[in-house]
Amino acid sequence: MGLNVFVLTGAGISAESGLGTFRDASGIWTQYDLSEVATPEGFARDPAKVRAFYNARRANLAGAAPNAAHLALARLQKGLVARGGRLFLCTQNVDDLHEQGGCSDVVHMHGQLGITRCHGCGATWPDSEPLSGETACARCGETGTARPHVVWFGETPLFLHGIEDALEDSDLFVAIGTSGAVYPAAGLVAWARRLGIRTCELNLEPSDNARVFDERRYGPATEVVPTWVDEVLGGQGARPIPPIPPAP
Ligand SMILES: [Zn+2]
Image 1 (tube, rainbow, N blue to C red):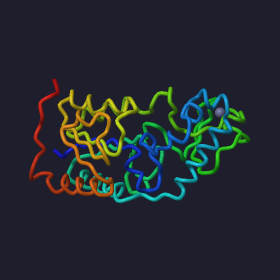
Image 2 (cartoon, rainbow, N blue to C red):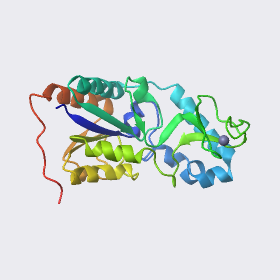
Image 3 (cartoon, helix red, strand yellow):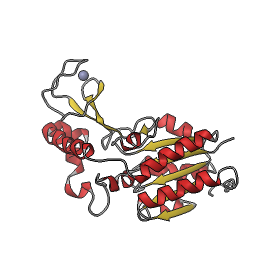
């Protein structure tokens, strides 16, 4: 039996690709009011402002490239599959740098910047052009409803049932570059512990719930992630990861 690894990634893995993080001292949420640009209420009040914010995010993404951490996870995915295991890659990121780095079947629990959604009927379509209030939805014909297919505050994250199932089937839970502040993603580590799954945090600095993890490693993602991947693939088979008792 191969090793089933559940990896949760956040903005910290994309930071060295030139995409801003959200919750640290210089993060995007210090420059914008999230209630204005990342909530359904903000979109209702000022849709042009919301579209401008996400058009800037799309432009940033067009200039970004996957870094060594994204590439290492693609190597991990292929390596685990070759050994009869699996990588379930769940990301809070709305960029597509995991895919650009070679990962497949990435679960985007907070949606994707490169997809436009009709706020009226829910239709979605791939779209790298700027969002426009003029766009007519191909399904319902409404204009003024084009928004990013991104989960806003107050909206329910996507694919939660699949995420639950995958976590229950995992041998190891690893959080990479995530602040530990946004739920339900931040609650996955506690749940993994309840299931008796070993947990590991790879981050630039300790996250809000760092103390919950069995193992912690800190440094730039482009350094700590490739090193960790080498250890997992190198040690797999020769040195099984010991089970830990469930948290009290
Ligand atoms: Zn529509």
